[in-house]
Length: 115
Length: 112
Image 1 (tube, one colour):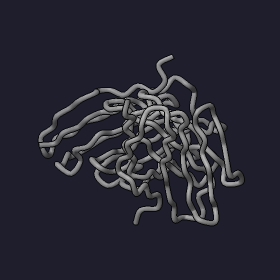
Image 2 (cartoon, helix red, strand yellow):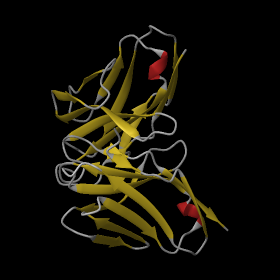
Image 3 (tube, rainbow over the protein chains, first blue to last red):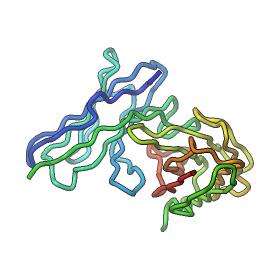
Image 4 (cartoon, rainbow over the protein chains, first blue to last red):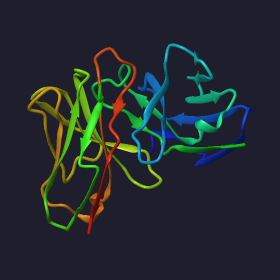
């Protein structure tokens, strides 16, 4: 049973507009959430994270929102740029950050930025 | 600073053959991990290590063994490869205080 779900396999957004990627989780023990970006033939690279004690974290064009009661988080990218085209993975951890027990990943959302 | 380095990048095995995937990190990280990624799936944890000489099972450990004899290296072994182990394997590492896990660029393994 998937504990981290990304229900949109793909998302197409025009350059300059906002991209919103969504993620839901089922395990209330998760206390840290992370977003990773992945280009073909490369490993995932860390984008942004949020602790369960916060509801928002911002880093430049990237903002992550956490709704703990709904067990839902989202990644906002504003403005979207062509280099943002990639697969985005939502991940969760039961301990702080990467933790000792690794990450649980969603299946990913392929973001396509249209010129 | 190379980060996390995996060798080899590609490998083709016949069913029943064995091999070892090598992972090295130069960030002095305490934790190391092996994940696999299959088409249309997220990454799934195979085994992990919280320090030199210690290993533990992740979500999908069957058919794999690991060793961490040195802090900077984490080896993943397949004793008798099966077609179901065809996948892309990612090694990763993280520190006690970091919020981020750093990944290598992957090893694409095909078992025929």
